[in-house]
Length: 109
Image (cartoon, rainbow, N blue to C red; front, side):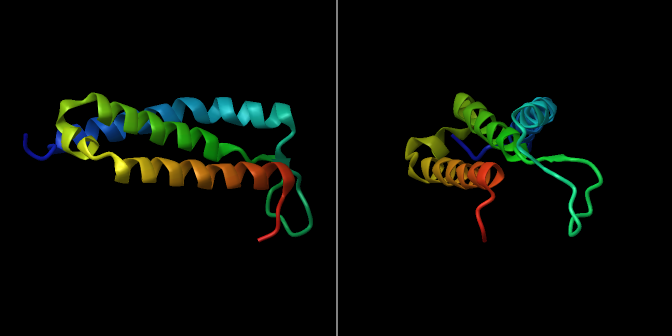
């Protein structure tokens, strides 16, 4: 089994991008419905309330891309010893969790 080709990487990129593209408007609506928005303020450049849960759509896009890579034979070597991929997924989920908590509770830097 050789290294994955450009087409394989392109498929994974397309799957992740398409998933993110489809989910972003849905996550935006969810964010507005839940009231998880940044209101316009004196120090803000936004003129309208801005939804803040967009990272959730991006996370799902990454996870779907990883799942698609796992399903393809071309990436078998990457998943043969899945420690690095599990670390990547855990880190992405952890960063997204902090982002959601910050969006909901506005924690300080």
